[in-house]
Length: 129
Length: 247
Ligand code: FES
Image (cartoon, rainbow over all chains, first blue to last red):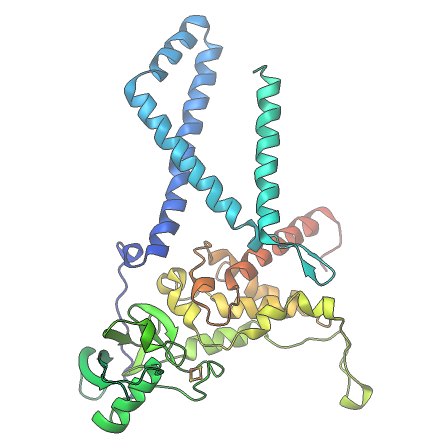
């Protein structure tokens, strides 16, 4: 009897469309593109700020265009998706255990949200909001 | 036996006569409490004796009956027909070559499992007469979930990294390596690191998490791999910062 194992082809391009869980994964990974783009906008803002009041004013003006607002809404949505999906998997990467009792995943996730709120509050306080 | 007729579309492949696999449909009269494996056994007993597939325990313990059931990697002995539609597509586990019908070639997984040294490496060997290596319940609870792996390879069928990178050591083998690394009686972590902490090991994983979702025993290989990434990063920085640490 001859062996002739058959290898099924795997699509390099569309594999992630075959399962909802792969689509969720790709969405999580793609969210970093918007976060990267938003960081780019911030850096441009800093450069404009260093160029004086007129440049900074023009930058603020550009931010108010419909395209810019649409981009920022997209970036916000993806940033929230990115943050929540990563926070939700933190108990897997950083499980805690006291003796035989594991710390519930919800507490580890909650601690991350708490840290997020505290750091955001601190930054808002420092910039004088 | 109830009157429910289930259509099973089974991917068949005969290496002696077929150029490629093709589906064959069987109508199976099913009982209310049947699982997919029962329907396949019915086909083997009553309709087509040439059908090849693996199974043994019929109780989700031996890990040999994994198949793609409507596109999802599952144990066929744990997949109740009452939870499935009247038309069920059954294929051999994806990401493995097909040996024949529903039987896949598992050699690659076996080699990878072997490569992570999935056994206890104690500080010093003891004979049975010298007694056991003792462990407290708290120490056991750190890794107990990973001992539940039955090597069914559903996680390999679910993993897109394994699908695209043949060399990837993969979820179950890395989870088992982690299981021994966490064991208080074991000192084999550095002996496993060459494979586990390599590019083909934990760093190939991009945390899709599909492995943990499909595991029939609730083992969490994705968690094991992320924890190993953290531990091996800590090792890396310690080796760099503490002179003479790595001999
Ligand atoms: S037959 Fe043993 S796990 Fe299904």
